[in-house]
Image 1 (cartoon, rainbow, N blue to C red):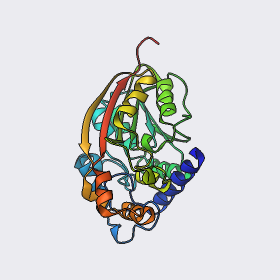
Image 2 (cartoon, helix red, strand yellow):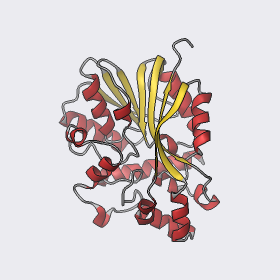
Image 3 (cartoon, rainbow, N blue to C red):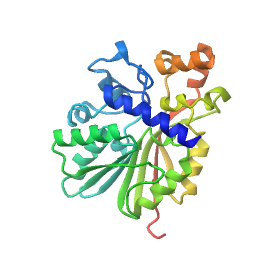
Image 4 (cartoon, one colour):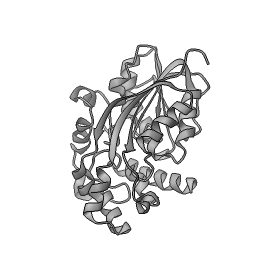
Length: 284
């Protein structure tokens, strides 16, 4: 089942990389099919502003780096410093990586990891376009990060860990990669109550960031179990009901799973986006 989930997610995001669009953020588009009439030049910008990015941040990255795929802005709360090494899980076309690179400077380094070859190709093209020499993109899975032990100062991620079928392993990998004293700042989707069984069993709903989402308490417990300390939710926001009700991805799930619009609204009411901070102890 885990491999099936990864296959569906990889194929869905490969399609996004090819044609543009969003499925994880509050966007009226679908990973599983054509975005059609929703493809507007300012769509990604509108989405990104709603989830916490500023006009200045949107203007400082290469064109094509922002696909509106996130559910928050982890860079804004990461307090990045000159010379730090940053690791971005599920880096996509490189949006957060480029923002981070501008903050750590030439003496720092940003490593983006993504399991979709098409996204890696697009990110590398964007790095060349923006002349980013302090950013590197690596193909790999977040459950098995292609980085050395104790090698990064901070791990960031934007609405990606919830897609993993083994989140506990992801947080163990974050712990392994962080230097002693290193920190984590991730934006993600979690649940306030359990999803209906039909939705939980739907593989295709993973691309919409729903079926893979954990209960909030379980998500925090998984982070703490990895050894990461001082875990705290810095920000929490409700996932607007109308975004799911109007999202073609949700509409497709409604048809395929035989759900009513009221049931979709009820599900949306149980979904929240959070920004979570944690630290690897200085002595381990």
